[in-house]
Structures are given as C-alpha cells and as structure tokens.
Length: 270
Image 1 (tube, rainbow, N blue to C red):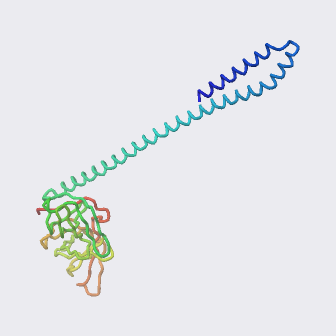
Image 2 (cartoon, rainbow, N blue to C red):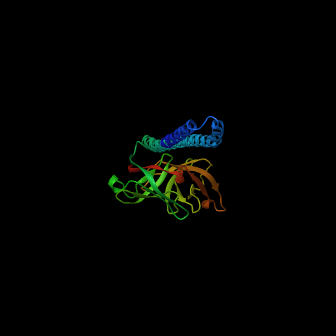
C-alpha cells in the first residue's frame, strides 16, 4: 500500500512539472487564459488524485487495524482455551480430593475391619436388578461373598469377580436377603429389596410381641455368614399392620444413596 501511495505522489509531481514547462513557453497575453484552462482541467484531477491517495492510505490503516484485531482475538481465544483447560484440571483434582477424603473417612469409620477401597464404575439400578460394578477384583484380594459398605452404611456383597473388577449385589436388589436387628426388637428380622423402589427394604418375620416405631435404626445382625454385626442399614419408615399380626411388616428406608454411590469399601477380613 505504501508503494502505491509513493507512485501516486510521483505522478502528481510529473503533472506539475509538465504544467510549469507549458506555462514557461507561452506568451504573457495568453498566460491568464492558459492558467485558467489548466486550473480548470488540472485541479479536479489533482483533487481526485489526492482523494484517492488519502483513501488508499485510509484503507491501509483500516486493514492494519483489522489485522491487529484478528491477532488480539486469536490471542484471547488461546488464553481462553488455556483457562478452560486449567478449570478442567482443577475440577479433576477436586473430584480426586473428594474421593480421597471419602476413602479416609471410610477407613477411619471402619478401622476395625481390613478393607480395600474401590469406586463404582458401572451401575444397573432398575426394577429388575440392582447391581453395581466396582474397580477391584481378584488381583486385589477380592472374593465372592465379601461385604461391601459405604460411608452411609451397608451396600451389599460380592457375587462375582474378574482380575480387575467385581460385581456387587446391592441390598435393594429383589434377590437380596439380609438378617437385621431393629432397635427395640430382640430377635432378628429379614430384609428384602422391593420391586419398584430403590431406597426401601421390606422387613418381615417381625416378632408379634415386638414394638416397632418409625425412625428406629436398623443394623446388620451378624447372622447368615456374610455381613458382620452392627453395620447401619437404615431406619424404619413405616409399619404396616395386617389382620394377621404375624404377617405385619415394616418399610425400611436405606441410609445409602445408591443412585449417587461412588466410593465403597470391600471388607476382606471381619
């Protein structure tokens, strides 16, 4: 663009020199007429050339401004991308830190057991089965029938293993059966999963002379050979009485949120 402006300047200079030569070779009488004629012809041309020169110079500045803005925009995009990456890294670190805190809390809470920490990598919580997959297996010393717990309470037990994973049947599965104790009941009751509910168990075989109240805590009884005694399962949600007192049952609301369960412990030694 600068070269074009220079060429235009040279052209203007040449035109002016030509006019000077013509004027120097004509008589004085015709000078005024020639000056007027030349002025009439040359002035618009000169003004047009100057306008064109300024226009070119203005366009050049505008293009330079656009290029500068483009460079600044690219730099901002790059900085934004770096900031987004840093945010993602911080989120990952925060998630890992929370997971480690949960593991520490679990370890402290169940320090009387030998345990292996794990996290849930897959869940199938539906009306038909309520199974989760965890990221530890036989290579980590995991075996079938080992209990699985969370910070909130009982989760279930191992039903199959691979080298690096294990399948857990949760206590809310309809095929699950857990022997439990209710606060004011001396004898144990049996808890089973319900078909259409993911946070409620059905307690049956309640002694006829036992008084059960809403809010009573429910823990494992230690019977059955799988679960150790005293692990929290949940609380009594309601008691359903029937015509036959021996058929009454209770609804137990589990303490573990299976829909959002992420970290667990596998009890390897009771």
